[in-house]
Image (tube, rainbow, N blue to C red):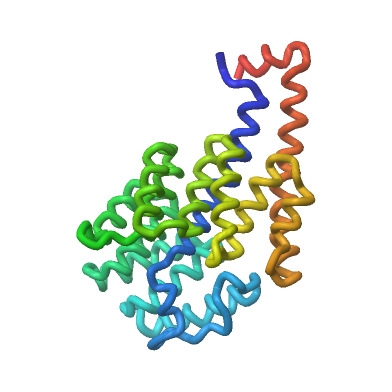
Amino acid sequence: MPASLATTFTNRILQGAAASLLVLALAGCSTTKDRMTTGSVPKLTKPVEEMDATELRSATDRLGQAYEKNPRDPITGVSYANLLRMNGRDTQALAVMQQVAIANPGDRTVLAAYGKAQAAAGQFQQALDTIGRAQTPDRPDWRLISAEGAILDQMGRASDARQRYRDALDIQPNEPSILSNLGMSYVLTGDLRTAETYLRSAAGQPTADSRVRQNLALVVGLQGRFPEAEQIARRELSPQQADANVAYLRGMLSQQNSWQKLAAKDKTPGAAESSNTN
């Protein structure tokens, strides 16, 4: 028997929301994060996670100019691609990283960033292969292992993904970005209670950032506790950033409400027959 409309639409919001946030988590685990303001790279006024849309565009433009002057430089190229992804320009970020990888074929940092750009552009198997080449078995990088998990989740391989997250936690216990990705893995399969457990653990870590709290707010909101979700979304953020997060949550949850109405129609006489004809 085909799945009911209720199941179909609920799964779509869970998968769409979680997949988009897994991409954000993947984009944020850059191995060059501590090098963003060094060398020839233009200095940034604040961490990229704290920038609003206007500041991100400005920083991206400045890094783009630096990249044009020296497209072979790995630090500039990786930093530019990271910002492009944060602006939603995944195709351009991939093109940048292709050029940087050609110029720096043995650079682990470049290979890692290239793999993340491939994943953001939907080239999942290629991304796994590239990140695998960046990894060193004798000294494995937990960030790359977690990134592999995020890619596997987007490929629908939840069991494999969760094992990679646990492998990463063995190396870096209680790391909030790994716990957050593990929680979002359970969102993808509709297990919101388990997801919330991992996300609360992630948000409770001293080094948790706003992206972790945004994931927690989304999962709480998806369970119908929107006032609590809004409170989480506004925590430790500027009013402008908090408003943007709350607007995102409202948009996601308004879609959920629309799908719930369709699910209610699924219970009316004749609805099952119509759903089975598609």
